[in-house]
Length: 242
Length: 226
Ligand SMILES: Nc1ncnc2c1ncn2[C@@H]1O[C@H](COP(=O)(O)OP(=O)(O)OP(=O)(O)O)[C@@H](O)[C@H]1O
Ligand SMILES: [Mg+2]
Image 1: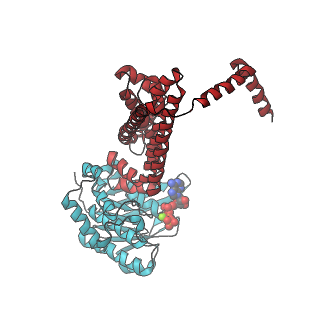
Image 2 (image 1 turned 30 degrees about the vertical axis):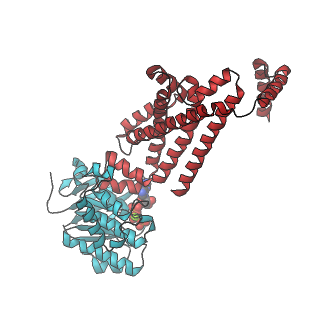
Image 3 (image 1 turned 45 degrees about the vertical axis):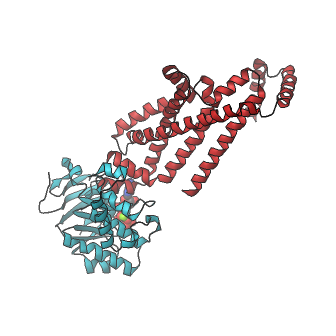
């Protein structure tokens, strides 16, 4: 109860600082919403652009996932003490954890600087981001594999990458689920990356937003939502099959 | 470097503890090539632990272990692996894959690229199919292991050991979850490997089968093998 009360008081203080408590703001929100709603329709003129942008976003995400999976498949064993000497695995893990704390948008900015603006930068950023996430997922998956299976494979003489691949195969369903999760995640992230110039729908949305052309913004948002929902449905269907 | 001395397995005064008192106190064991040895003893006596020591998965607390004439403490683990097959109690098969995949897996250490790409040579595949046929699974080669019965899974594990060309087969309670007739058929198959010169060391619970089929029977009791 005391926690609730003190949070509430803190909230009041911050509302004052941010000017959220201002009653004028709320009436303004109302009129803006009315304006926005009156503009709300699909602008067919930009539909072609919207479809292209969504297609670009999809390609960026798929590239990010496939490149990320490949990298993570090869690199995750380096982080696993089952495959590597424990000290080396711990060192690699620490490095990976450190790199993982960098958000996708920062990678996008980085690659926009290196490769220039456009979908290339977004795609490369997503490869790095996806791989660094999947490395964590994959080494945790390797760790969770039944010890007796690991033991008998080891006695059989397996080590290194082949050992990791046998363990991956054992955890196939789990791995596919993780990859699909990353795909869903990438499609969402790829829509944002355009804001920093890394290609995809985000770029157009920011553009039309600055022109206050809400119907064009709406068209892009709807196209994006359609993409996200489609990907989620596909991913759900694949998960049902495996 | 291939060690081919008289005894594939030799243990002298081996002791072991998991940190909660001595489990194995003074284990001596000498096994010949092509011999079938049964290890018996009540639950918790340390039978599984003993198999793990022989396979190099656990280091003994004290004593001397020599496999294929190479002392374990001497960095021999790498050399002796591949020549030992270890079938744990739960079989450790990759259930979501076919019987054939699981058998071919035994050759992954020698042909890692073929394994990773699943591009096995025709001769490897044919040999693996031959082995599966020999254990009576000719028509189940392409079946996923999770769809096989307990006895059939045990056969896959044996087929994998044969395909591995292991010289020593360590089997932990290979028949304890099977009905008597199936169990007898599996033990019979294990014992028939002796004709290939393979040494069999199996943890057995069934006295009747042990006495009927095995050359030597040891009982593990109070940390000592008799
Ligand atoms: N990793 C471990 N850490 C600590 N204690 C262990 C470990 N593994 C086994 N033990 C203990 O060592 C004892 C012997 O275990 P082991 O598995 O060798 O027995 P077993 O003879 O194979 O028994 P069963 O017939 O039930 O399979 C048991 O009391 C067990 O609890
Ligand atoms: Mg046991």
